[in-house]
Length: 320
Length: 320
Image 1: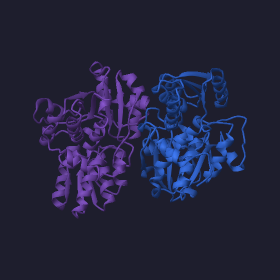
Image 2 (image 1 turned 180 degrees about the horizontal axis):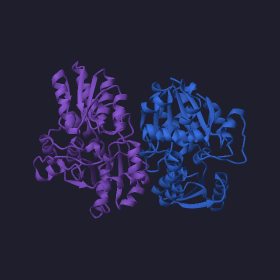
Image 3 (image 1 turned 90 degrees about the vertical axis):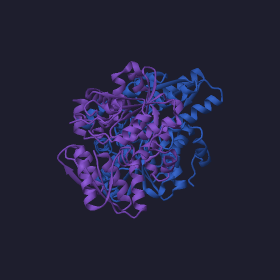
Image 4 (image 1 turned 60 degrees about the horizontal axis):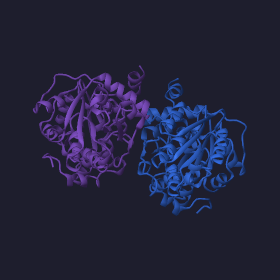
């Protein structure tokens, strides 16, 4: 069992706290996509829920803990999906939810955060600016700051995906996981390395936002000055040291992919699986497209982590 | 309990025969769509599986019975989805599967039937011509003819959707079900009238293929000379008397919708739920669009029954 901040008993216990609408998501082979990619492809679909991403698994844990402790408010920075999920989980428990996001985040994500009743504050700047601003708000108001990937509940929530994958470990060789802050990669990776050690865990990040991947390869935190990717959901510049340590313990590899491959991945997921996905959810397919020999004949699972996309942008990418 | 050809014990037993990949499909509230439609909308998603429609539930039953009995071949007529599902279920059990379809069926459906290893025979004419031809093949070769909606396994398979809905009966008032041959409507309707009698069961059919709906209203079989609808999955002209009898016992209403509403429904499902669906799967939303007062403030569930659509046609409908 790898040494990380994660704990299998806590992850099992998390399942009883998370609303079932986020659990036991579909996992199925998509042979049409597999034929195109030259390998056996299974899809783990995390978008068929009220917030259209896997983030509800983590926010359910956070919000229920806060409610238990009588706390009334919470703030987070979000690229868009965490904010929706926290809005959903917090709103149902009577919590005041504040979300700080970049003004450049997809309008669809911002609109849905507002629609969930969360207070939305926009910053001029990227996700890292939003993180700073959220920390300031938390301190000033004396409320809980939820930090994605650093706060263990976000990793534990994502790790419940790993439990579901491990139940079907005989059906795949490799899991491809979108890498952003690292909650999903460390959570899923930890469970697989513990319950399905034969499974290969490969993290995939855009070349345009490579901080965590570079950090993983150099085994120390590498930050970047800027980012340039359409995969807004995984765009960060400052890897969190504790998360990097966990990732070093559970990932077999971390690879970077081009924007053109992400777009090609989105297009293939539409054409062969009928799925409209956000760019981050196409990272796994992009990785196969960039290195087909590596995956030839392998049985892969790709986690389709979100579908919150501006349709105009999507249309431009996929049909443009 | 309504008097039909269906039996609750057999439907419960069916769950243990059907591959789990088709069972316990996502059901979730989609508030973005609900706001647009003026009611509370839940989606029951039947497309996240290897054949992208609910039909696998029924073909799993049929194929496992045939395999048990040592039969080696089966033939069916299909608008496209049943053929794929039978190809999948039969192929995994070593059965020779022959599918007869109209040459006008969507190329995407025909390609996927072939890709599943089924023998595909095309007829010049509509689904009713395919039915005739399939019966001839069955007789000539002495093999099992699978008849959708008439063969009770197809209704029982679809009825397992009803069990899953009934488990959440406190969350909805009305279920909207696409009506074609009637397997899904009678199966789901029977279970709901038995286990959740408070739930309203409304069947929805295109105005361009109204035979079963007209038959339901007149309480006798009405056939039509022709059909004209993009909702290929529900297009039939000759209602089956036994299925009509069952439908009369379990449906609260059957309504017809315009093609323009089906297209608008597909567009709303894309815009507000991120789902690419085939026209038949948009019938429920179309029904709400045509009669918003009837559904205002109600809690509805719409079964998203399939996503096998030609993307070019889809694009033309939704963005054209």
